[in-house]
Length: 320
Ligand SMILES: Nc1nc2c(c(=O)[nH]1)N[C@H]1C(S)=C(S)[C@@H](COP(=O)(O)O)O[C@H]1N2
Ligand SMILES: [Mo]
Image (cartoon, rainbow, N blue to C red; front, side, top):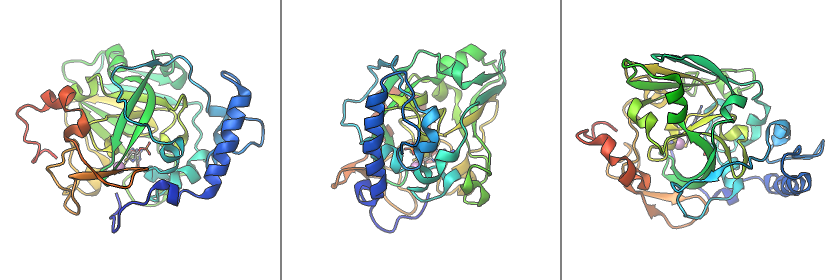
């Protein structure tokens, strides 16, 4: 993550005007098309350069509302799809909306391997058949901003149970697509590619941990990690790896991209912990995108009641 020398601007101040204009066009097209139909007429502009994504974005009508959702006010669609970290497309917050539309997300295969009885390759169409839920979660970036996002997805545990982890499986390793031809950020060395992340098996099986396939009632835009990304709401946003092509059940703690890039600042656990400052800034407060005043950061991003028991006996200052 970049060094922040000044507070983040609300994205309403930094999002190019064209995004808002295109958004209105997009909404009109979506309403005109109706559920199940193609979303846009040919040539209709979408958010950012998302016109390239028209064929892959459609409404998800069958998601049930989850009791695990927060009832906080959700962020605007423009914020969630216009203010992103996805270094494969560049390090600027507006780069993913600008460049990710070129990513080809069909066909999409996610391989599951390692210590499982039933390894395999899942097509995104198969994964979309899992019972989908809308989960409204807080996302807290290590850069000290946060959003509330109405994800659509299913528990990662549902998929892991299907592949039957063996007794040797202690961790889950995740890998993002590596395709420098479509991901301009991968032609630079901001991080080591492909982006990788990992969870302990019990964290991965926790009911709050989901694989997201959509948000705001539609399939994901590429800037949010289409067609499939992880969401772990009690950890810093960078654990929630995007555009996943491989999930491996492994015995040893896997490498993670931010730890490889800067191990003194980013550890394996990365639980949101307001008492452990980032070496270069405080983590005790955060700015909700769209708000002006900072709010106090909550332990485990407010999910402590559900997840604190996973870490009993673990020193969360050492295991940052
Ligand atoms: N592959 C990949 N996944 C990634 C990142 C990335 O650069 N590459 N950035 C992470 C960071 S730092 C954050 S805060 C979240 C942002 O998710 P969002 O843009 O959907 O809000 O994605 C995470 N997942
Ligand atoms: Mo982040």
